Image (cartoon, rainbow, N blue to C red; front, side):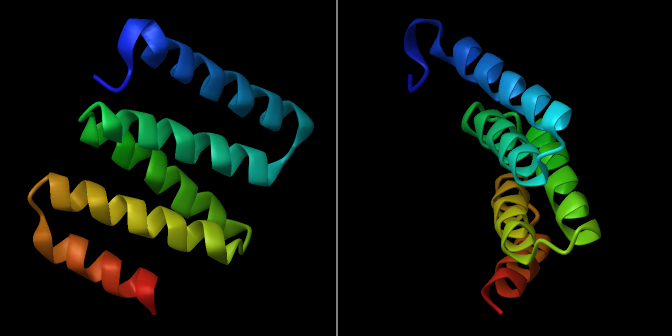
Amino acid sequence: GFYAHGAEREAFAIAERVYSAALRERDLAGVLDAVHLLGRLHYDQDRFREAHECFWEEMDQSLVFSVVPMFVRAVHEASRVWSSLNDPLRAEFGYRFALD
């Protein structure tokens, strides 16, 4: 697969280290990027519920701090998750929202 030879574990470890460092430094963009990366890693491994939690956190924090580009990015990714979970109505709403 895509994460051959233990690369999946290494990718998660890197994302977790980036997340921790961004929290320590109070780097909002770094935190949002790390959460996004964790969501993508979960998504790539068909762990859709975990991916959704990450993208939801990214949407929530982006909304709270008015970081519109990252909010839209998270909505788009959450829509991909909803599509994978066979929830086409939420997926379509999210895609349309992200496009506007």
